[in-house]
Image (cartoon, rainbow over all chains, first blue to last red; front, side):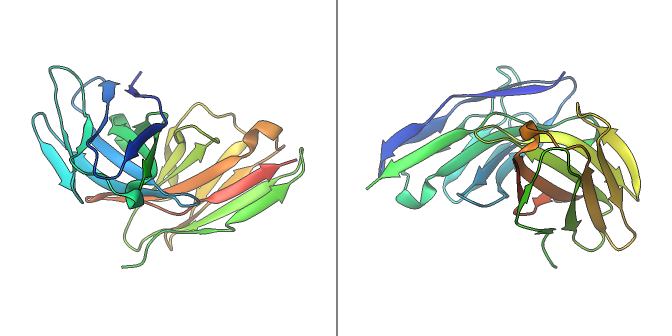
Length: 111
Length: 110
């Protein structure tokens, strides 16, 4: 079945450091790919998405490119802020519009 | 456009009891999905409703059931609660722009 694997955390960075969170997926067909963010005590917020190969999703300085050849959708940000501290989930939307999530990566940014 | 609203925000139940969680979706969103997020894990798909009928289910036992109503609200019912049912339960409504999630109900089973 469909699955998503993302790098384990926590990832701890200093403010203004470069961020990469790796995400790879296994799916039949051509799923849409997403990054969601979850702040403490809250639900999920869509951060960015890409619906086909080579698409780049971007939002709030975060970017991810849909790489079909490597089945990857790595999240990057050039300069993180303390306010970016949260849990980040990579997800795919497969058959029946069902979302399949990775286990999540905790990001901690220190000032 | 209103968001997705879930109630209650927190709930404590005893093992063996039954619980009903509620979700009010955005107007016009005919598809609603429920997810279970155990502590430290990613959300797991429970089931999905489209126009008041279940049209997809994840790997959850029949004691997890749901309803969707014509006014875009929905319920998740869990019977015979077990300790492992303790989790954050998320409701999400779907439209052409994608999924919108509620803030969830934190269920603790003791």
